[in-house]
Each structure stands twice: as C-alpha cells, then as structure tokens.
Length: 171
Image 1 (tube, rainbow, N blue to C red):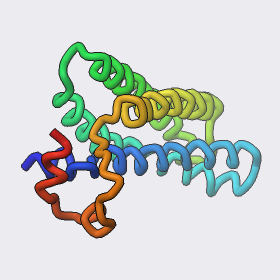
Image 2: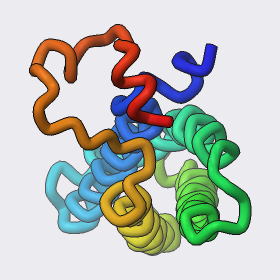
Image 3: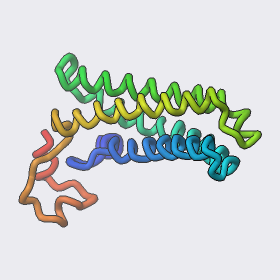
Image 4: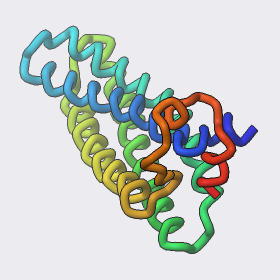
C-alpha cells in the first residue's frame, strides 16, 4: 500500500505531481502576461483561468503526496523543518492562486485578465518559485528519497516494479 501512496524506492510520487502543478501555474502565468500584452488577449485570458483551475485541482494530489512524504520524516530534524517550510510556502502559493481564480472569474467570463487577478497570479508564481527552490533543497541537499546506486543497470533502475535491493537501499 505504501508504494501507491509514496511511489517506488528511488521514484517517489510527489516530484512528478509537482511538475503537473508547477506546469499548470506556470502556463497560467505566461497566458496572463501574454493576454495583458495583447497577444490573443481573449484566448489567453480564457486559458489563464482554466490553467489556474487545473493547477488548483492538481495541487490537491500534489499536497496529498507531499503530506505522505512529510509524515515519514523524523519530526524536529533539519530535514523536517525544511520540508515544513517548503509545504507552508507552497500552500501559500496555492492560496494566492485560489484567490486569483476567484477574483478573476468575472474576467474569465468576459475573456479578460483583470488587473487584480493578474497581480495575484504574478505574486503566486513568485511564491511558487521560492517553494520549488526549497523543495530542491529537500532532494539535492538532504537527499530525500534519493538512492545512490550509480552502477544499477538501466532496466532495473527504471523498472516500474520494486526490486529488493532498491527497497533495502531506501531504508
């Protein structure tokens, strides 16, 4: 059951879900900017709001998988403190994007990006970048869920089925 909640050893579930969420919010930000610049203004305004909705929905899965990871960290450790800050910053970004989507719904209906929602989108993306930076520290500084098996054969390293050696290496 743990495999379905956390992913495989060396292949955690949370990082690829963050890619979906960051991609949706990133596209929303780019669409808002292009709409404000007058490039396919109405089309990008609609795309902006819909991308925010996709980001918000995918955030639910991303936050859920992150929570499962967070619960497995030794409480009070530097890794736990870093992960907690990462989670709070990203939750803050999602709240800003949620407010942008709510405030901008009228603009979506009229195919425009309102100034307030535009500013909120830019702020949300800035906060999201900080959260991603902190998430990078969890992987690249603390080595969260990273296995160091440089001689592992390609087929075994990329297999969708866990091997006993991988499971043991993660412990």
